[in-house]
Image (cartoon, helix red, strand yellow):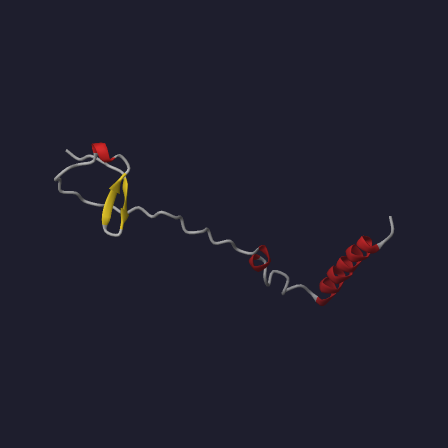
Length: 79
C-alpha cells in the first residue's frame, strides 16, 4: 500500500512534518517538489508593439506627431 508523508530534505536527511506518523524501517521513493515557482516572464508593452507603425505613410506619421504635440501642449496649458 502506498502512503504519502510530507517533509523536507535538509543536508540529505528527511525531516518529517509529522514525525510521530512517519514510517520506520521502510523503503521510500522520494519525489522532490519545486519550492518556488519560476517568475512569470513579464513582457514590456512597449516591446509588444515595436514596429507596428513602421509602414505608415509620411503624411500619417506627420499627423500622428502633430496629434502627440497637441496632447503635450494640453498638459502645459493653464487651467
